[in-house]
Amino acid sequence: MSLSVISTNGTGSADNGFYIIAFDTLDYKNYLILILSIIYIITLVGNLVLLAILFLNPSLHNPKYLAVCNLAVVDISMNSVVIPQMVPVFIFNMNYVSFGTCFSQMFFLHFFGDMESFSLAVLAYDRLVAICLPLRYTSINTNLRMFLILVGIWVLVFLLDIFPVLLAARLPYCASRVVQSCCCEHGPVYILACADISYNRNLAKAKTLCTLLGPLAFIFLTYATVVVVVLKVASAEQRRKAFTTCLTHLILVLVYYLPVILAYLLGAFRLKLSIDMLTAIMTVFVTVPPMLNPIIYSLKTEEVREKIMKLIGRQKVAIELNNKG
Image (tube, one colour):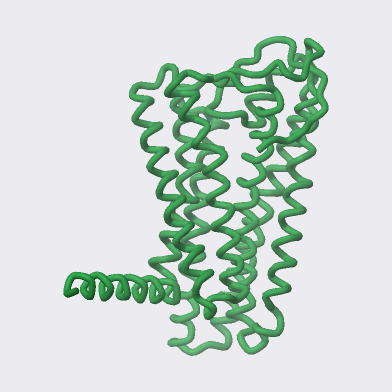
């Protein structure tokens, strides 16, 4: 993946790259890479299996699972941007990254991270309509409408993330080119510029508030609305079913937002952690949610769980028939 950028750095060349430096003081860094590799494999297998089940079962071709497919694609893309490039960097010490590759990685890293946040907000919207307006759900939330919502979100996140990256790429980097991170993150890169970076810092803060707290506030608002509506009109059994239905999405939200918020707090306060330890913790926090999302959906969503059990049952029957034959 590459992103073409027009840049002027301190040497007048757009090909002078950066050196990714992290985990130098971290003991057993190879074990960390091994853990991240396992996370990546589980992410790929879990999300691809989930996508295959949704694709092969026409009964699941509805707006809700269109949003779930979107989340699965984002999960795979997110961890594919972060983890594979760490192996040559930290196992084989191939830590040089060209200028264009660095800013390409920066864009996709933040793009898919922000898409994760907005994708959870889309699932909250779907749940809001399903619980509060069940009789009108099929007319309000059609496959076409959900598709257009998802396309709109991809375009919005692209616009939100492209400008900070392009502005950072146009800064002059005439001093240190050593990035204290596991990849080309926005913050660790633009602070290396030998120019005024106050505008870049303020833009990054504003973008973070928009892409992190904006969807989170919307999700909280949808849950508050659901609680009010259910408590007013539902019976005890209906309330139980409604809250059980919300549980899956609530788990997804907590899995994503709590680690991300904690990671930001650790970064802000440092909490007597070394930079390498802080980077390691934040990397794991960022990559775990994409791994857990398909597992949660498979285990906590009855429709998907039934399809998986039927698939496993068919495989067992096929194996038994082959053995008898």
